[in-house]
Image 1 (cartoon, rainbow, N blue to C red):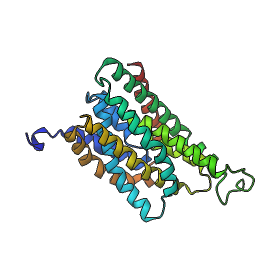
Image 2: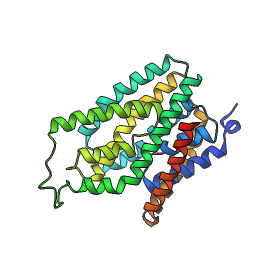
Image 3: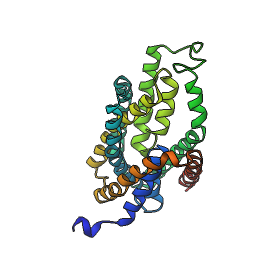
Image 4: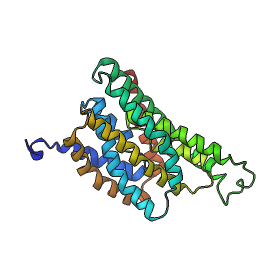
Amino acid sequence: MSFIDTFEPLYSVTGFFVGLLVGVTGVGGASLMTPLLVLFFGVHPVMAVGTDLLYAAITKTAGAAVHHRHGQIHWRMVGLLAAGSIPAAAVTLFLMSGVDRHSVQAVSLLTGALGWMLLLTALVLLLGRRISTFSLAGRPGSAKSLSAKPMSATRIAALTVLLGLFLGVVVTMTSVGAGAIGVTVLLLLYRMIPIQGIVGSDIAHAIPLTLVGGIGYWMIGEINWILLVSLLIGSVPGIILGSSIAPRMPELIVRRVLAATLILVGAKMILG
C-alpha cells in the first residue's frame, strides 16, 4: 500500500494549526500535538509520544540552525543538559521496553504523566511574563544586577545536569517539557545570559534528546511513519506562517487561551 493510499489529510491539517500556534507562542508542539493525537485521533499514547519525539527532532533542527547562525547557542549549557538527559532517556526507554506498554496500567501511567505535564506547562504559560521579569532583574544592565548575589558556577552546572535528568525522564515518557519548562528553569539559573541564548540552547539540547527518544521508540516498534510524514507536511508551513504573523498577534491573549486549553486537556487525561 502506497503513501497516497494511507495518507490522512486531517493529520496534516492538525499539524498546520499546531505549527501555527507554535510559531505565534513559541510553545513546543508536543504540548499540543500529543494530546490531540491521543484524545481526538485515538492514537495509542506510546505511539503518539514516540512519533511526536521524532517529529520534534526534525522540526527543532531548523530552529537550532537559525539560532546557531546568530551565535545564540551556549554549547556548554547544552552539554550539561545532555549529560543528565541522554542517560535518563536511555534508562527510561530500557525500562519501557521491558513492560507491556499496551496494558491498562501502562496506558494509565502514561496518560496521567502527560496530563500533569500539560498542567505544569499551562502554569508556566500563565506565569511566564512574571518569571521573565524576575529573571531580567539579575541580567546585565538591570538596576538589580549589581546587588543580586550570583550562584557559583559549580552549583549552576550541577542544577543544569539535574534539570537535564528531569527532562530526560519526562520528555521520553510524555514528549512534553523540553520547551516551556526547560526554558523557564534555565532563565532562573543563567541570569547573565541573554534570553535569546537561553532559548537557542534549549532548542539545541532538545534535538539529541528527542532524537534519542524517537530512535528508542522506533527500535521497540512504536513509530507511525505515515502519521509522522503527514504531520510534517502540515506543520512546516504552519510554523512559517505563525512566525511571520506573531508580531501582529495579541500574544498574551493567545497564551492565556492556550493555557486554558492545556488545563482542560490535562485534567481530562488525568481524570480519564
